[in-house]
Image (cartoon, rainbow, N blue to C red; front, side):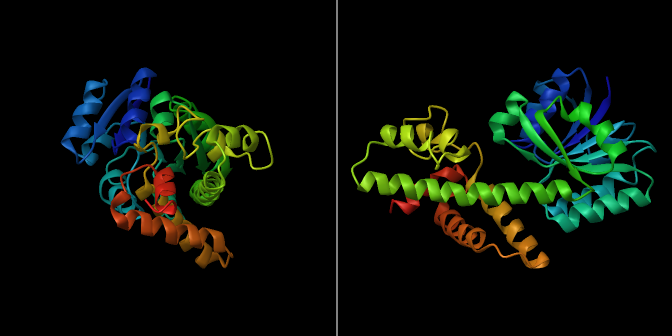
Length: 293
């Protein structure tokens, strides 16, 4: 059993921390939200008053924060000045690659091992403990992090040096954003042409148009019972978060000189969707905007 500080207990961090408790670890929990913190305590975590207090005496620190600026601030002000030598640092936030590399470098200069380990799988995956972790860091740090990540996820992939986890995450989610738009357009076209959604699904899911967005997250009600389309697009992965990831992908594309015209178009469309008041809805709900609703 390890003593783990967990900072950031939102929609994803909360269930991830709960799974560490289920894994028989002692979890010292902190979040600025009293409600999120209380929910973690109800699942067996121990409440602490600050991020700095959480990391004192911890063997492992896990963070799940909204953006790069938050990660930089928490590590530089709260984590690094207060952790003991030998503590393993795991950042599961989805942030820009530069921030991930910066924090990793600062941790290394302090003599600490760190990995960036953003996730894919949404709230459902966080709750079920089936997340995919894309992990950037050295071989030794990855080996230490893996048993902890396995308590929260099913697929643990070592993608390279620190920052590579973030790079893999934004590439993956750019693909997801673009394919969701393509699937939405295809099924809306089928609707206009008089096709039954189930019949079209039966074809596409077993043909060349098959993809994760079709088989697991179809944006039309009916054929995929677990899809958010069957619960009024209640979020498993919010449109706000998809837009955040698409913006990160565009930032990385500009910095690296990569050409991503489809990613850029997806970012513009999701920006329109979010600015129309749909940020808290599931990202697959963009099909309604494309349908003129």
